[in-house]
Length: 136
Figure 1 (cartoon, one colour):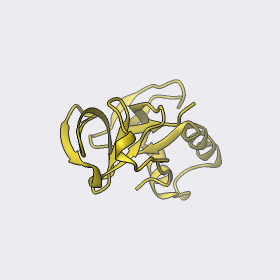
Figure 2 (cartoon, one colour; figure 1 turned 180 degrees about the vertical axis):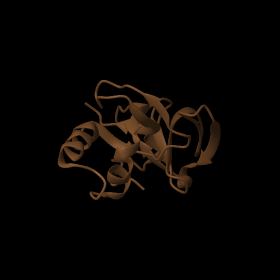
Figure 3 (cartoon, one colour; figure 1 turned 45 degrees about the vertical axis):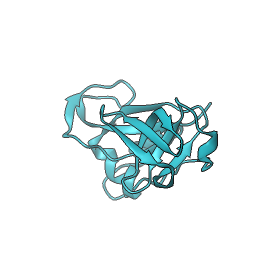
Figure 4 (cartoon, one colour; figure 1 turned 90 degrees about the vertical axis):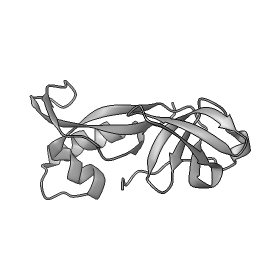
């Protein structure tokens, strides 16, 4: 579980198509694509879709962006567990800067890949992690 949490509005009656919702049991955030009274059909960043009851969800009604971002393998323990044993002070500062605009981040659901992403620097292994960006 991430050390970053969602700022949420739990009043399901104020939720509209285009808002986001987090499924409490699986800590997975998706975009609301259809409403059926107390039921909400969500689309997730991995392309899957499912309908949930309002009691199963935490709603995010502020304007946020749900997306996937590349996170280097070396930063995973720090981001998800607060682990400082495997990173340098410079890496911690870079990870903290990366997290400044992120409201919530979920663990990856796929294998890492090799790429060069300018923000992180040199060629390295990355995971794509689903995120909810902070409203600006």
